[in-house]
Length: 410
Image (tube, rainbow, N blue to C red):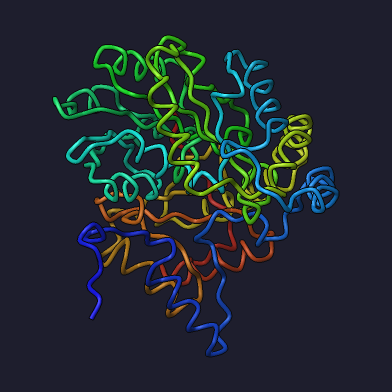
């Protein structure tokens, strides 16, 4: 019998875990399931920009060989220019391409962490980070994002959790799962903490161009004197998660980052190179990024319309209250305290088994209060409304009549 590694003990990634697996089984039995658990815009029919698809199609014949381990020079040049326009000076050698941020995060942590090192992570937060920290022997330590302040992080709570073993601070804005866009003042406070405690900043900015009446701030531009690793890619904004086209950029004083960058390059060489056809999509994608953002998430964009539809339908369910998201494409409602248990995990299980709606419990995002669920707002209006009707039925509520709800704000 082959025994799994002890490193997997306690490791979880519920977004691909028991509930989605149960949904697969139910569908195989003929049950129609509305899936609102994943952030996959392509699965819900949102189109990719034609110039992105054309670039990949035209590059196929020239994509059969390996590239440099860091990725195509033309793609890294385009990324460096993109950040230059946003106020961050980078050289193409500071940039590594990868098969999605989900590959680059473990790689970046492997190059840095020693067993027992502590990494500060937002709670709630995307589960990839905690799992990746654990896999390399590190210890996730969670700092609070405050629902009463529109899910902005709490710098005082974060500061109180720093120990002699703390080595890195992870940020995520726009935020998954809450959709919060962290304000510049808060980001400066986090950078100040990193500066005073000599922490590596790691900024997950995959939703940077999915904002609604809010402005995303590149964290590294607020802290050019600090080592910072910025993660982003095309999966969400260009609706091509299957392409696995992403990057990470190391900024800050080169004297402080040189050895770390060399370690990343060494590890990246082990996988030889990233997916080559998808690398060709990066220059045209970034050249048209603002038009793509407006087309998808602007006032007339399909993503904004779908999010508005989901928000309005959710607002008619009295047992759920939600801070209105200002970025990404998720809703993270709180289950009313008046609702009798079970909540969270059992609620998600019942919604799936009895009502055919798959959502993610807040527990999947390292929120242990047991009183939140996450829903994606990517489905078309008819599907969203049907899903919300089924959720309302769970609460014995009729959502036909709109109700007034004042959203929580920062």
